[in-house]
Length: 360
Image 1: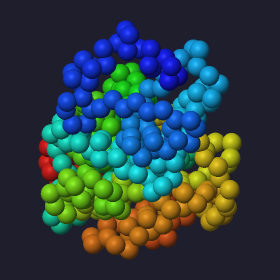
Image 2: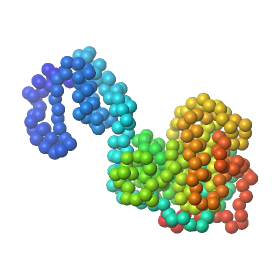
Image 3: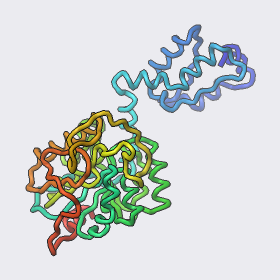
Image 4: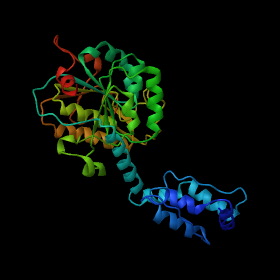
């Protein structure tokens, strides 16, 4: 506000009473300052209120000067938030700690890596690549033989196709996810799906599923503040949610891990994602690399990071699982290329009761 407006407000607002009521506790204060330049005000806010910048309410008087309106516009355009984020991602760390506290306050089950056991069960890890669509009928036909793991947005494609998802893996912490998943679950239901989410995922999503479990990511601040042991950490869980799915499957001593729709790219720039996916993830595909089921596919550096972690998942695996890639996307070293239709099941193939018992 204009300084003159603030001074005149003492005639109608009892600031002393407001101070006594709200500012006697730690963490609450009212600060008034006068600044001759926009830089002075921005500097003050940056250094005194970094935690407030992400959700501050900005009021500008209708009769404010042009200079005041300009300062207000700079703040509303998240100038300070970007400065904070670009200076070491401080705001992101604060938000992850806040989300973790909110999640843990609900007292969810916390993931704990089981001890090594004999191999059992076929785990189908689903990605949101376009090749998932051509295999939905195959998945539905064989769903009683597979532990079906949806990775983030492809939960929508699977549920819309009438497929029972056993585990949904979430990695991200964006607040936009709350509205997306809430609307989807209201319309299609969550079925018997078990949710495995990063402890930094918005806590509201935990309430959408009958059974939820949270895990700690190894390289984020919350693991140092809140975890109670190394077995609560899910290693190899990023940077893509499909990495989360594979990391989880490896903790269950699987017989086989099968990738479907884990394209990490696309064969055609006209279709870059499974049609029924939840939300929107814009991407550019500026690289051409070796394909899994064809000579080449399109991808980008961010998705290739996920591919590198999947390669390492094979190298670092302690069990004797077979790694099959039935996705029409990026070739993954260490994974055997195969078509879904060519995968053979034994007569005794069924869902891994071991995993279901461990979870329940």
